[in-house]
Image (cartoon, helix red, strand yellow):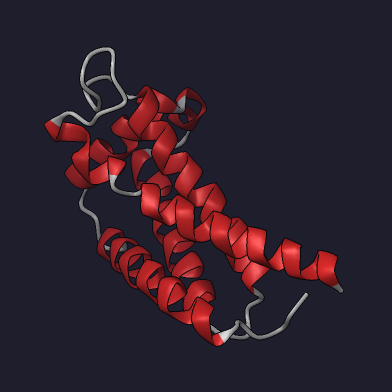
Length: 142
């Protein structure tokens, strides 16, 4: 596993890091109403999260997003590790999109207006998978 990210991996890593860091920092000071809304949407798709208090859930989500953003922005975090973490995070977001009522047009994968912001997170999945596939492929060549 390479210790430093390759130069061509930095632009997508930094783009994803900027968005995820901004999201995490924005949630760091969420009020009760915002925490309840975020938690409510998450529990609709992932019912096991209902066992957590909304404020605790949003604090954990915030810290997770900040940690992921920092990992992506730090070139010495291996791309395989950063890519795997990003892939898992993006898969969770796309799970919200696919399983939350009202996010998609009826009988379609096309987003409804309410789901457009989450549907666009598919690019995060693409970046994560690209990093993972490249690193695994590179490892197979050596």
